[in-house]
Image (cartoon, rainbow, N blue to C red; front, side, top):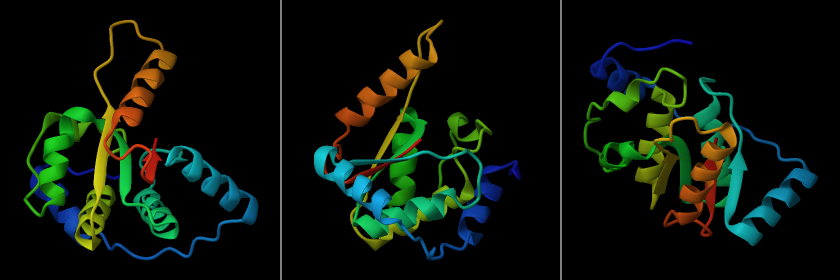
Amino acid sequence: MPSVASLEALQRAAADFTVTDLSVVIEPPALAAARRSLDESGLLLLGEVHGVRENPLIARALMQAFGLNGLALEWHEDLASVAGAFCAGEALADHPLLWSGDGRITAGHLAVLRERAAAGPLTLSLFDGTTGAGWSWSQRDEAMARRILAAPAAGAGTLVVA
């Protein structure tokens, strides 16, 4: 997976990332299931393989297709102020959690965040967090689910990307 080694390079890569429309075809059964999920919970879950270049574009396409202005990302909650300031047009501030290297935070994600925020109201929630020593994957997932449900946009049309 391509990576950048400095904050300046990450900002440059985000600025150079072309945010384009994807031609997404949603088959009728998937469309019905997605609408049902949004109607019942206000949430639509998108599973992603971290680090795939098209992930942020797919998230954007789904937000547009369903008219969603809430986005929940599996980024550590301690990045909320950094991401919020970036969405507001400020330069990206350095933070150790930007550099996990696992593909959850990419230049494409940053470019799409900035574009979505500029397009209209965006409610961003970050739902990963510090886990307890010895926690199982189930305990970690439960903690993330609690954060999603407690987020201000929960129930109001949010794409959850995990």
